[in-house]
Image (cartoon, rainbow, N blue to C red; front, side, top):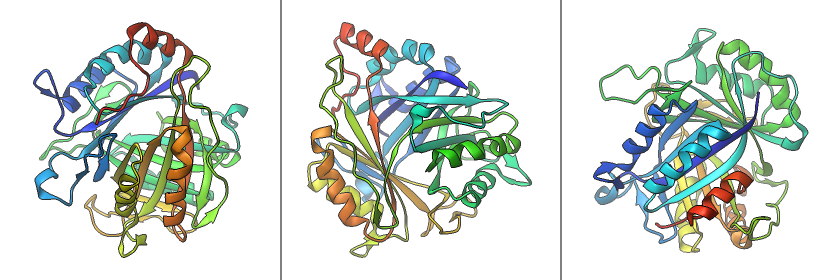
Length: 358
């Protein structure tokens, strides 16, 4: 277990360019050359930022400018070294930095640090065609988490990224076996701790991250509301909060898929930003794992909607989500904090840790 890791996440558009090169290509070239332990580029289906420019695959005129999300995880020192270059690329969009526990290799621990709290988000990274117990690894892991009673899990298909420092980019005709996938799951911390040794048996070189979250809703039942937080941290830098809604194409609101309806409603309410990602496999609550059998999109696949907002407005965003998830969905909240060393570096450089310029 690495006790001092950071997750650097960037939100931007598919058409965005940096020095004449696509932002996504330039960013992943950086992560590949730096041999970042784990990174994954995800292509969203709809979303908006501070200026509320809608990006969606439902309008032909802008379907080639979809929202992108790229997450990179490595030691604090390596992420800190890369951060100035990442920020220099980010002409518009959002950059967030979050603390995470990175677990790689064996043995995996049988307990978790107390600071993770009662509920933990477990993220598993694997290749598209990686195998475990005679099946696709992402399916084997999902089945294991479902059997162990976790609240939910969603598998997201990456289109580029690094695994154990090695770059793997999806191509139209290639096998794409090593292109990374991200499996996001939520459960009680004792459940997560108990499942870690079994995950190591499925993958001899597992790459996992652990993050503290609050479970707010599950299948319509309100369990808790997001924490009330100050607008700035102890260093005077702005704090952001993240709400994540796990749902499915079959979950509806006013006849429309919940994740798409959420983006439109949040945009109309002037929420700072939201991005919806379509999954390929997953489950929520007691529902059996389901999704794409051949990694092809069809109704029934899971979806994840990420909402970023200031603490003073997070309650308003949560009210909308609460109203629209009366029957289905899994909702969590997280703090997006400023790490001390990074805060000092950013203050010196004259830029902020998290910034919106959509």
